Image (cartoon, rainbow, N blue to C red; front, side, top):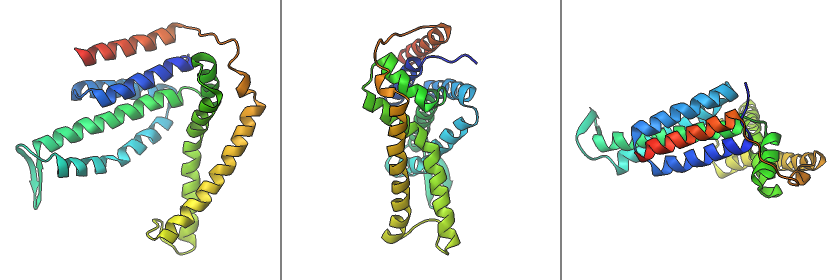
Length: 230
């Protein structure tokens, strides 16, 4: 499948993320989320499921927050001492759709290209400073690696007779110390690798190309913005 340029996916992610915070229409948020997630699946495949799983982790907190601070209006559900009212359901729906839209837009940006391609595109096509592009590239590359490192640390804790979830400051330290140490070393060598590949020198002679896929992305952005306004 033909891919858009990095600047197209970057603009899409920025506009959709801003819209997620500004727009309060549930129908539009649902439609924009569906479009973004579909594009993410088209280019990222199963990796999009991982981003959606990360976004879904916060839904319990969103529901609890709505139940505590926005539980007004007519009763929708009552179970024992728990009473869920209309406004809480509305707030939960809007915030959940916002999370889905942000995850979907982030997937469009992060999964369409490799981390090195994104770094080069941010420097060459958009003109971001080298160190900013390098930080973005490393952050995108580190997401699955940090998850793998954390799983290995938790497995070793279980093998030594500790619980998987640290409940004491010492337990938290036993998880964070190796995790930070591993990723600090990885960041150092990631920077060395970027220097070897010549990322610092990709900014010269910047030229932006536009093809049919980029035009389609821009048309999608414009259409969604128009629908959000009207």
